[in-house]
Amino acid sequence: MTSILPEKKQSNFPQKFALSIFFPVLLLWIPTGETGVFEFINDEDEVDIITHPTGYNGAGGELVVTVAIEPLSLHADEMEIPVKNAINTWNQLIPTTGNIQIDDNIVPFRMFDFESVALHELGHCIGLAHPNLATESGLDGENKNYTSAISGANNAFDLDRGVDGVIGSGDDVRGDDINLHWFNKENNNPFLLAEVVDQTTYSLSLDDLPSGHRFAANGDRLVSLLLGFENTEAVMQQGITSGEARRTLVADDVATLRLAMSGLDRLEGTLDDYTLTLQYVGRTDDADIVLNFDNKAAFAACRITGTFLNDKHVAIQQGNISFNTGFAWFFNPVLTPPAPEQPVVSVLVNDQDQSIELQSGDRLTLKVGLNPGMKSGSQTDYWVRAMTPVGEFWLDSRLQFIRSDTPVRAHGGPMIALAGFSILDSTTAGLPAGTYTVTFAVDDNRDQVFDETYQQSVSFTILPR
Image 1 (cartoon, rainbow, N blue to C red):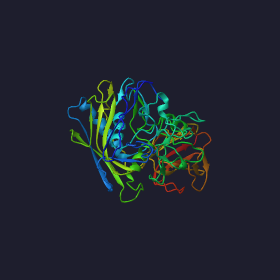
Image 2 (tube, rainbow, N blue to C red; image 1 turned 90 degrees about the vertical axis):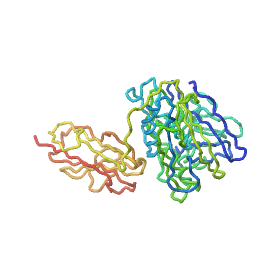
Image 3 (spheres, rainbow, N blue to C red; image 1 turned 135 degrees about the horizontal axis):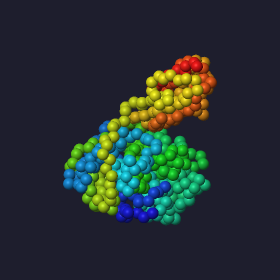
Image 4 (cartoon, rainbow, N blue to C red; image 1 turned 30 degrees about the horizontal axis):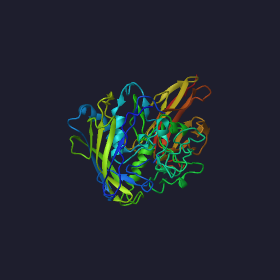
């Protein structure tokens, strides 16, 4: 694989008053293939620096960062909708799975998706770095996908993919490499978000890894397959292909920013916490972050400057995102609607959300759906209840309906998007005549109590022959 980027410009820290850095995003022409990492990390004495967006001064509250398009930029008209979409994605901070889309109807195969790249670069401009070693490590090929670290006393990266054979996973053997990746202490899973995100739940110390783990896992697409999440990769992971869209965040991206938002004390729920709002201010060069096709990057890059708030926290001063005109860019023309405030659940019988009548022997399908909206990633209990002519049945964790007069939970875990998830595909043969009502319920907590906070029902009637 051949990089199309210049080398990273290293910053130095003579007095810890001001600094600058240049982080490119790696784009390849050929296919490749947690909380993450922050900008302005320099050496082993600086590994736990947290970087904050422009304007943070240690006080809590809402932090507004303005984003604009350079008025004279080429493609200024086409940039506007995808930039607004990327801003909305960061503002909503919704963790998703299955965010890798490779479909000629979404992004033409020989073009690069501007929205995906802009989303990544905005992440750099608000303080997030690459969770993987990436181009700045000087490594080649797949070795860039190992979890971000700095070399230890031997002055070289130690790279061993471990027993599972997957680079960037929790069993990698990294010798004396010093980890830079903030990981979920409970599970070291970059695709699962902790309910509380701060230094009590995320760590850099390998001593805090779960039993059996050897290094922090990162949000690489092959790691996602290993952990049971298909077609998923962190937005901040360096490496994207032509014809690919990656327009939504995963837990790793969300957790990194939320860790920063826990403030100087790194504890969620205290007075120095802040919320971040990116605000599009149109076409101007007077904004905290300005996007421009100015050919100052070999492909795309964010350049930022920052100042230290104290010895462990940096605030960005300004960011500029550069794009190169020498590539075939695809500009998404569709404005993405905002996510709903509350989850939306659905249950369908034979792809219908209204009552239907069936004859004995007819095909019967049941599907459930969930748009978690702003609650995505929240811990929840899932329930499916069927009221039948012969009693109450519940879907269990093996996706089988069992007879029970007390609730049986189908699953407990994070609230994720479900699109037409099949729970039954059979016939009505052998089922007694009468009316059946199926309810899909999702709770606003994970306590194994049937709260049915968000629920939807559908009925069907089996007619006697």
